Length: 156
Image (cartoon, rainbow, N blue to C red; front, side, top):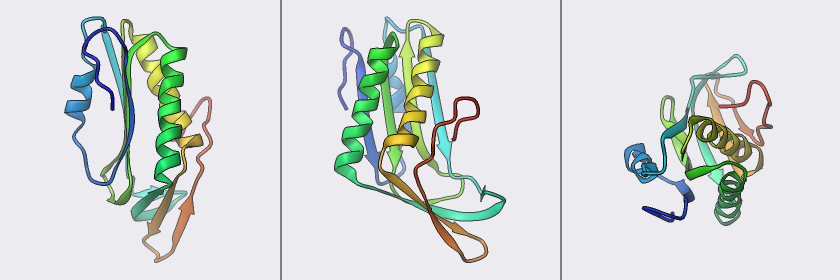
């Protein structure tokens, strides 16, 4: 991910094969021209569609996922007056409760930070080639993707 202390906006999208710490990512978005920060964290939940979930695995077409993720972040920079936008999405096996995706945005004002954050997570879920393989308590498993963005309720 690029890093800019002043001037150019901070921007980046990454896939992570292992758990990651959000504190250094948030720190990269702290800038003198930013008065607001918003973030979204998506965690593995213990249910889906009324079925108990034991865990899941994310698989991605890494080259295409990275390119599309970076395109989405750049779109957010163009659409909203933000100082920075970063996104990291996990791949591999995850347990219930683990962090699966993180988006952060900073801006002079909160509205832009919130809007950019929401835009990125909705577009990542709808457009980036990342597939989720859920394992259920009844022994069944299912591949899920894409998750269409919803204007009102959204998909975490």
